[in-house]
Length: 177
Length: 177
DNA sequence: TCTTACTTTCAGATACTTCTGAAAGTTTGT
DNA sequence: ACAAACTTTCAGAAGTATCTGAAAGTAAGA
Image (cartoon, rainbow over the protein chains, first blue to last red):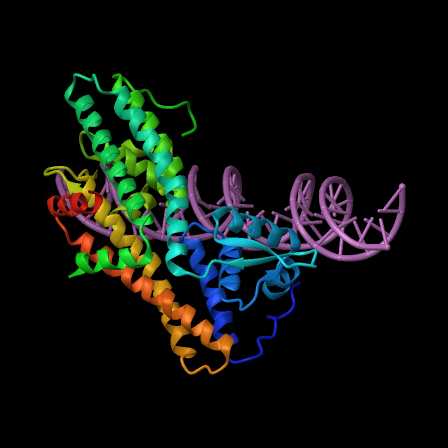
């Protein structure tokens, strides 16, 4: 599994190699692990669904690693399992529609990042609502402002996520003009 | 530096302790390191600017760690250096206005996450614009769609970031109603 | 110029995350 | 019930990120 990079035959495959490698590196910034991002990039640019062994070979990764990260992507809703009739093994394909991808990611990040933050802020605001000193009241105020901001961000995110691509574009045009 | 947690005296300080601890943990999800998030939480809820030794003691962290992460926060623009006249040492204070904080973070994340992604997409789209095969054209199309989406996201982000709090609220009202 | 008060740096230690590969588990067909 | 084809798990290895603490650096005041 640690040979040189596998052989990309037609010309666009070179670009694809680069896309996969770079997307993987970018995943790190995004708090997504490299392999997961690479598998996503690979499937996103795959003409056909792929199965585990193909993915392992193409990315030179172990079976365990491939399996874990494929599951994770399926968990995010970015990749789905495809069964070909008459075939036993599982194939995987990525959502290719960019708007749907965006909404999926937005929802998941909201769940993972905003929800827990909000819980903390609510608790802290609640606990200090009867403070009497200056510092105590300032702290309470700060927590409330943060809480309201996060609630607001969540509403915006829900609204956008429920839009169809077309109406989002229309909305954006209005905003940007 | 590895004693038990330092002593919070008035009642709201308990909430503050919790806020700092939890905010630190949340930082991880956000791709921000724990200490950096904790220092930010500490300063955000500090009635007065603080200096390095206070921060070290309050969070039980080393001088090097404190120094590095304070610089990083200053680099992000979330914390500023304050010099008190007649005093030699440097004090630090966090931006407390939530909207300003949001804009600062949005700009920085755009720079770190969106800009490099865009560069990759542009390169890949450019390299494959004359592909003739089906798979090659599909790949090119996919890169272009991603590129356009990211460009669009950046425009929205710029527009929102240039708004004053008041006009953002007004805009949001329209969106949400 | 020297001392003192403070800040910055960085090599090595620690803690955390991710990956491997082999073994165990599962399902399907005979 | 068994074998073949495939998937999942997990203990330990490898790789990264973060933290410490001590030494080096800097600047103000005497």
